[in-house]
Each structure stands twice: as C-alpha cells, then as structure tokens.
Image (cartoon, rainbow, N blue to C red):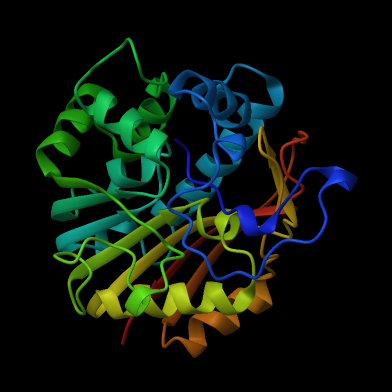
Length: 289
C-alpha cells in the first residue's frame, strides 16, 4: 500500500480538520492509498513519463536542469566518493544513473512502496510490472555520453541495497534503516521531487535537511531536484497540502543547516496539468563543510 501523509490531505470541502501532525506515516488507511502497483504506475505516467504534451514538458524541465548542472561551473564529475544515497528519487532514475561514474556503491531509499517495487523490477529487466523508463535512461545516457544499456548495467553493479525510508519518522529523527542512518556515512545524497511533496511544513522540512547534512561525510554533496511555489498536489487520495518553497526560504534552510557553495539552476514551468501548481523547477548542488 502506498504510504500517504494523511495529516495534510484534503478531499475538497468535505474534509476539514485533521488530527495534529504526530503519527507515523507508515500505515495510512487504504482509502488514502493506491490499490495496486498498476494504479500507481498509471498516475506516475500521467505526470512524468506519458506521451502527453504536458508530461513531456515536465520531463523536459528536469532535463534542462540536469543539463545545466552537468555543464555548469561545478559539474557532476566533481561530486562523488565511496558511497552515495538516492533518497526517494523513485522512477526519476536519471539522477542515480548520472552518479554511477562518481560513486563506488549506491543505496536506493524509497519513500513509496510502489516505487521501490518499480525500481527493483526495472533493475531486473522485468517488463511485466514496471514503468517504461527508457526515455529517462536515454536522457541520462546522452548527458553521460554513454550507451543506455551500458549505463543501466553500470547502475546495476553500483547498487548496494534498495531500502525503504520514512522521512516523517520522529523516533530519534532517523528515517533510514539503522545500518545506513549513521552520521558521516555518505559522500553524496541525491533527492528528486520528494521532500516538498510529502513534508507539510517548513519546520519539518528543516529537520529533514539537517538530518541529511548529518548523514553526509565532511565535504560531501547534496544534489536536489525539486519545485518552487507548489502548495498542493493531487492523487486518488485527494489533495495534499504541502510545504511551499521559495528560492529564498530554501536557501535559508540549507545555510542554517550548514551547507555551503549553493549552486542553483532554475527553470520556469512551461506546461501545466491539474496534478500540482508549482511555478518553477530547480536543481541545486550544495556542499557540507
């Protein structure tokens, strides 16, 4: 069942007044979840990987951001080390793919059970129960200047573990399995389109960023893909009211959490759909001292 941050969900005028944000989100009621992997795949395809004009627009924004970072003043080749963490990127596989040449091993941590299943199936070349991620693979291969199949095989050999994460777990502030949720563990953490979608307020967002900073080794890097100006996103469950980020608010959070050398790429939204109301996409590279 898809985990759902039910404390900040609304289904229009019929749902008002929710209990305080204090429960774990490991066990949302089934009414708030996708009933099957296929249903989740259908939703994700609508937003990111379908053939619709608006979905191609969303994907193009990600590609523009990524291309700008790869060719920027501090390209991806300067980022990496022994161990990387993909924190909730899910089917946005271009980011772990691009890091395969930069890290010796990578842990893939998924917030949604469905995305964990999708990626495990995709890495096993299971065509019966996974999304078609070939467009994202092709985009990453172009940027990396490598054949797609070779890049995917490189990712397979790089993945050390595929685990679940619970960003909203308040127990000791940890959200990864204990063996990985240790200070000074990772050389690079990459996260895409997750944090602002499941975190309801800026205080909680700041706590998660602070924990990510703790997970990084000295001089480790955080690579974030996200959106600015989003107030909600819609699913079968209803409308999720999420933290709204601006460049200024996110920059303050990162600097308050100790990150340096913030390097931004921001792209205006070109295509619109009913799923969310974000204004801009961003890619951000930051460094721990």
